[in-house]
Length: 388
Ligand code: NHW
Ligand code: EN5
Image (tube, rainbow, N blue to C red):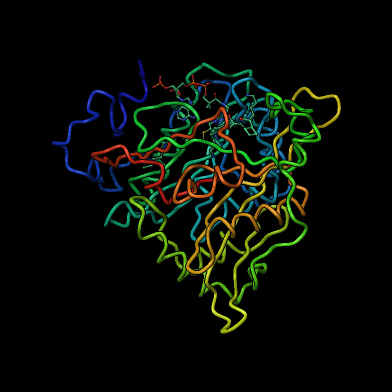
């Protein structure tokens, strides 16, 4: 069934439910001197490159490959359209390795035809903090699909991760592979219902008119929580404390330090939005919410070419009700002209999804660990990790 994945140190379907295995690494590390020193062989016409995402030219080539060939929904109506600024940010966190930004070119034309990346991350799995690679942006050009290029790309990124003495990885996919640690549901909150219906992202509900639908999703002009404001650089220590304390309750979550929070959570135009609540009385930072910008290309509409989507990232409350905080997030997202606000049913998101008029999407997201076994499949609400 899975000719490649059956050979890899990942949980296998036949072992699901068998609790005799200990939780933890599936294979022990090997000495780095025993890690293969040369890249894996590619089919003759292709060559490996290490991508310098600092270079405007290289970044544009990656952007073009992904814009035309990356993830689509099941009916091929929308395709993720990560911006260049987003890709640069996503690929250069604290301690990143340039060698983990891997491209494949056609030798003769130098055209970029495949891509895969890793970034380092400390991820806590129950009580153990494990240094891992987060693998993302695996993409093979549409014309080169089903030629078993993906397994070679995955083996090559694995080799380069091993060379840094890192032996575990985390990744997500819309497809089922051996074997998910959890499966999450996408939820969508319409902000611009007319456009969403026009482009086929959503449908007019039964017994609903356009004007009733627009009224249903209407939001106030202004946020309601006193002290709600954009996060600023001087907030990094307070937000780190809030987040560290909040993420303790989940079975799998990142172990963020201040450098990580500075990189991942400070606002960046058209990439990341983050807001917090500063108590008007004592100036304490009590709550925090964030979302990232990931537009999708609209593949078949005569009237619109992009869908501007916000994706819920990390949200923490200690004083404000999560429902009210996320309603304020919807209000600012609407003000900033997002068409839709997306969220997974991870962490405590179920406590606000239905009430804030999110509806379940037709997509699911499966989470995986490489070379790390869990004894039980997690509930989405036990997961404290959001990948981009
Ligand atoms: S998920 C998004 C992945 N990208 C896309 O969906 C873009 C559009 N599709 C494509 O570009 C986020 C191609 O269809 C791809 C497959 C390249 C997906 N993950 O080359 P073949 C990520 O980036 C397996 C893992 O013939 P193809 C996460 C498939 O099951 N495996 O297929 C990436 C089969 O193996 P099997 C996937 O369609 C995580 C084999 O690939 C997969 O031309 C990567 C077929 O290969 C997917 N999304 O190319 C793993 N999709 O055993 C990281 C298919 O079933 C692991 N496959 O025969 C950790 C590594 C680091 C470890 C460090 C210690
Ligand atoms: C991880 N880094 O399928 C990336 N999206 O529901 C890799 N559906 O947008 C994994 N099909 O339901 C990516 N509208 C896996 C996801 C791939 C993309 C994907 C789904 C998630 C999606 C939309 C559009 C469907 C178009 C037809 C959808 C319904 C919205 C409606 C709004 C009103 C209330 C009910 C729901």
